[in-house]
Length: 86
Length: 486
Image (cartoon, chains in turn brown, purple):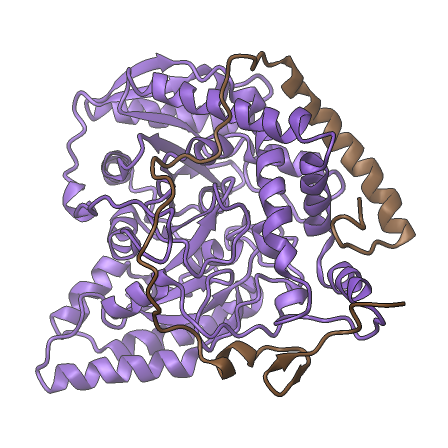
C-alpha cells in the first residue's frame, strides 16, 4: 500500500499506522449497516456537468515563473533522477 | 478604543469618511501583532511592509480626493493554503515550506480589488487535515481564550488571529468543518458557503468535492461583507456556480419572525457535553423570543457521516496530494538514485503523520478489490445524507445545532487516537457532504471561560437566511462583543 501511494514509511511508522488504520477501518465498517442497493452514488453536489470553453489559447504562466520553484533545473527542464534502467 | 478592536464595517466607515487613515489602521494592527502574536502564534508569514505600502497608496489617493475601493485598507489574515502570488504558501507542511506561488487565488484578486490588504498567512493543520491545528509542521497556535487549549482546526491560525484582534477579519477553508469548528472554539463568526459559491481556483486542494473558502470574522455583518467580495462565478473554477451574488449585508434586517428553526434530534446525543447542550437550548429560546418557531426534523443518516467523509475526503486527498513528488516545486529528498525512490522518500520525509495516514486510507479505499466496498459505498451514503437535508428543508428555513460536541480541548488531549480527533467533526461534516452552507457564532462560554459555538445550516445558496438569523441572534445577545484577555 505504501508503494502504491508512493510513500516510504519507517518500520515504526508502518507498525503504528497499521494499528491506527485498523481501528479507523473498524469504525468505517458500520457503513455496511446501510442498505444502499437502490441508491445512486453522489460524485458531485453541483448540477453542472462537463463545463466547457472554446479551445482558444489564452495567457498563462511564463516559462521562468513555472520554473521558479524547481528543486533542480537545467536550462528549461526540471531535472530528476534516472527514470529507466537499473 | 483601539482601532484593532473594531470590526471590518466599523473600520470601513471610519476610513471611507476620512476620519482615520488606512496607514493608521494597518500600523495599529501591526502594534497589536507585536503585543500578542508571540503568545498566540497564529501567523506563518507576516507581510507588514507590503500591507503598509498598499495602505499608503490608498492614503495618497484619499489626499488627492480620489475615490478608494469600498474596503480600502482593511487588514486581513489569509489561511496558508490559499495561493498568494510572491508570498510563501506552505499549507503548514515541510513539503511546501519554500513554495512561492506564481499566481494569486481568485479570492485574493477579488479581495485586492476591494482594497483589502494582507497582514500575513496563517497557520493551519498540514494540508487542512485536522481539527486542532496541532498537525502543523511548523508551530502550535494557541486559543486566545486559554493558551493551554487548541484554537480548533484546520483554520486555527485564522480563527485565533481574529479572536486576538491581530487582523480585522480572515479567510479560512472548510472541508469537514475547518472554518466553523475553529470559529466556534475561538468565539467568533465563521461561515462555510454552499459548495460552488466561492471559487476554489488557487486553493490548494484537499478534497475537491468538499473544499470551500469562507470568511472568519468578529461578527456576522463582517462575514456578509467578505462573502459578497469573494463569492461568484469564476471561469477558472469549473465547479463554481453561475448564480448571481446577492447583497448579503442587505439581508441583515434583524427580522426573523415566523422563521422555522429545524432541530435535529440526531445532533443532541446522550453523552454530549452538558454545558454545550445547555447553551444551545438557551440559544434556541432566544430565537423563539425573536419570533422564530421550533420544528423537529430528522437527519437519520447523521451517524454514518464521519465514516462516509473519511472515505470520500481521504480518497480525493490521496489523488490530489499525488502531485507532491518533488519534481516541479516543493521539497525534494536529498538522496535518491531512481525516480520512484525519489517520489517515495520525498513524500515520506515531507509529509507529516496525519497526512500520510489519510493518503494511505484513501489509497486503500480506492484500490482494486476495495473500491466498491469502501469508496462507492461512501458515495451512496453521501446521497442518503444529502437527501436527509433536502427532506428536512421542506419543513424549516434553517437547521440549528451545536458546532462541536465539546468545548475547546487541551493540547495533546486527542492526539493519541486519530479516531477521537475525527469525532470532533461530527456536527459539521454532514454540511460538507451535502454541499450546504453553515455558519458558527458564539453562544456563550463554559464555566471555565471557553467559547461555545452555535451552528446554523441553510439550504443550498441560501447564505442570506443563515446570515440573517445569525445576525439577529447576535444583536439580541451581544455574544460577539466579548474579547479574550490578552
